[in-house]
Image 1 (cartoon, protein in one colour):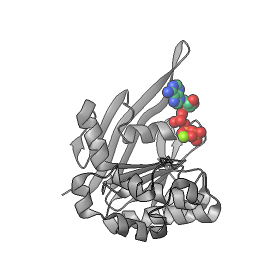
Image 2 (cartoon, protein in one colour):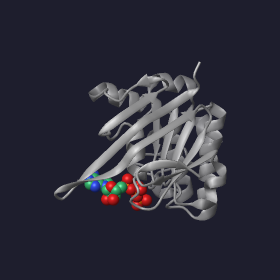
Image 3 (spheres, rainbow, N blue to C red):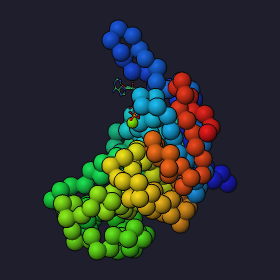
Image 4 (spheres, protein in one colour):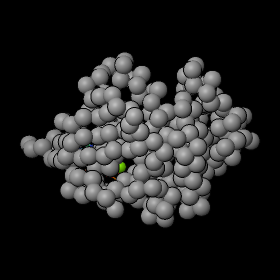
Length: 222
Ligand SMILES: Nc1ncnc2c1ncn2[C@@H]1O[C@H](COP(=O)(O)OP(=O)(O)OP(=O)(O)O)[C@@H](O)[C@H]1O
Ligand SMILES: [Mg+2]
């Protein structure tokens, strides 16, 4: 049985640029196995967020295929696509995107799917991320690092197969950034899931298993 959780095959994407089309992704391939934590680096504007949005079923490629756990989800649209995204994928962004008027426990409870609550308990997750004491706090009462860890907890709450993180350390100092990425790594390894992280931060690359670079619209190793 295949251990591949996410596979992208020959993905292309262009954006309209005035009169012409500008190709951002030009035949990108990526295969991620269970338990892998992969980094994607590359200059600003090279297409990292575009790629992550395609992998996260937020953006449709012009061509190519996306397989989740062996199933081709490229052409699935509408509410089924949303359902797959909610069940199988977890997102972590540069800014935590927590809702200002909700306590941490409620940030998690409102996105938690019923079946997931049988597998993952909010208390366990907050303990693992070392923010148990933030359970009853609003974002305004938490530090930047705590807020980002609450956002990481939210990404993991439905026990997704794949975590997609776009510059998760960008708003944190070096130490807090490293702690957050260590937490992502620990959860991926513990739960035997996969994560793809886009980052500019070379100091945290040692926490990942493989590094890819976007170059001329393609993904290359190292
Ligand atoms: N919706 C859009 N319409 C047109 N052009 C876009 C759109 N989204 C992104 N682009 C362009 O595509 C290119 C790649 O954008 P993308 O956001 O993927 O880059 P990135 O590698 O994530 O950059 P950064 O490191 O700055 O976040 C950029 O030149 C951007 O201006
Ligand atoms: Mg980006």
